[in-house]
Image (cartoon, helix red, strand yellow):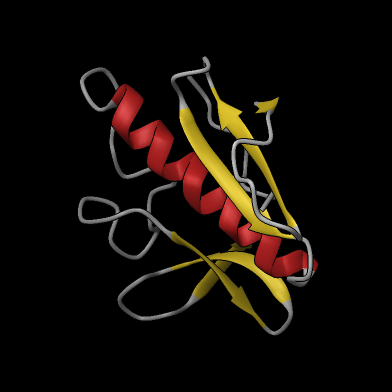
Length: 103
């Protein structure tokens, strides 16, 4: 991730994932920390899916309840940035605390 102010709005900070033609993420400095973390995680997840769909599973991180259906969703729940099931809403992990993947 490269810090690059491509968003010219007061109170916003932005960065690019990958090269200068990569995916951009912008967050409001006035948003809560959990909201900023969830926003960045959401964009990184979207980038991961778009960049690696031909070579890797696109349900990252996989939903433990529905592993063959959809990935977890980055959301804010009880003032924490978490990965939750998008259909049932069950929280599975705090963002940044996913278990290691064994290859």
